[in-house]
Image 1 (cartoon, rainbow over the protein chains, first blue to last red):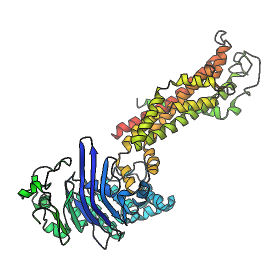
Image 2 (image 1 turned 30 degrees about the horizontal axis):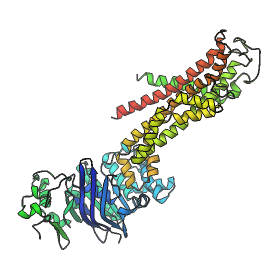
Image 3 (image 1 turned 180 degrees about the vertical axis):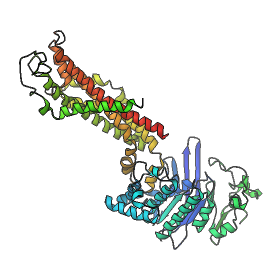
Image 4 (image 1 turned 135 degrees about the vertical axis):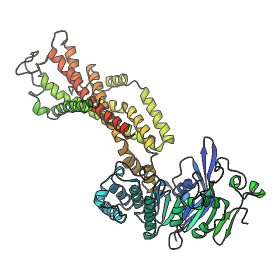
Length: 315
Length: 273
């Protein structure tokens, strides 16, 4: 029920230096528990992860053009009007963005900002909204709740602000929670605190987490499924445990080998510019196992028991 | 500079309060009703602290009642100008695109209008009234506020908390008025004070030129009468000096407050990095 289905989604930006395809024919499914697990989208910076997130949230900038379908409860989200979107966003589909300290309005107290969600979406009165915000923060274990609610974002640490943002995002028990790099720039302790927060939030409110990250640890802990993105394409999608044990796509293998505990090996070369992606397989210029076919023919996705790979090695 | 800031703003505030109280309680504070007649051309003495004019009106009383006109026109015009400038700047900066092009085009046109000559023409053709002058000043002096607001909104709209508010499903109206406006209002307040000063000077100049409201005797109007009746030639300094001084002082007061706010603002930006 109420799954999010992304079908053949492409996003093209028209920039002054030409058109650029940041997301190229991506298909993904995301269902809330218990029918499915959280999904992590991993990949290097600049591979189109954030654009995909913005497309799912209906927040693409004006120079972007999306094609394909994003289906939710029988509707294509790409066709929604701004008014329909503002009813959906924050309520059914919510998001946590990177840079927590900048993502809160500096002129309002924490209590006001969490309460705002209840006031706008549920029409609650100021006092009621404040009470609900207090109850929500209570669960986040931020200490003296009354005092915390009256504080401003600049008086909070980065990690505390991140938890406030998560609280505001899951306040109305959304079906889908998009988290874009929620652990970016946090130290190890805070990272695990935020991961724990997201895990609890997901479990309590039956929210399907769509985690967008280049943090493979977080992805492994939080998500049952992993999708690997490279240069705008999904190159591999698999069940998390099996994926970490034995990744199939050469890029996914290289990505895991770059982790400190797996050898700290850098991937040679650079990700391609999305204005002019390579012919054939997009990873072939950096691939250690490239073949003749990789140069010219774009590999199709092959599926084997829910394990999807886009590579000529697995046909 | 830092030490001067508070002193400036305090001086301005005290001066402003004096005029404000005078305008508010004119009926109680004025020693005589403004229309009551005494012996004309009386120099200052015990009964008439600032003397009387050609019709025998008490000048101190006229002065106190005149402060109402100045403050009303100043505030009214600045309020209109600020609301207009704020609205146009917010819409233009937030929505960008076509709305921005059109609104900034209109702003450019308004910037090109020679303002004082236009008011003179309007005042000459329409029946002169303080309300009209206030309204016209308000409708002409919003351009710089709109420009300042727009440029700041262009910055603020790109900040993460705006995107975050969009993620939480807040409407454009809510974001513009409840998320962005509180973050730029501090820029507008000093501008508001400076617009008050401009409007008061414009009103005084027009009244001095004889284009003011004969029904509401403002300080500029008092100066106009004094000039016409030869106060300068006949050395009737108590008739000329007070309204001139009052105009100067209230403008200085408002400017001092506005500048100190502006200074505090820039200091805050500098300190905040």
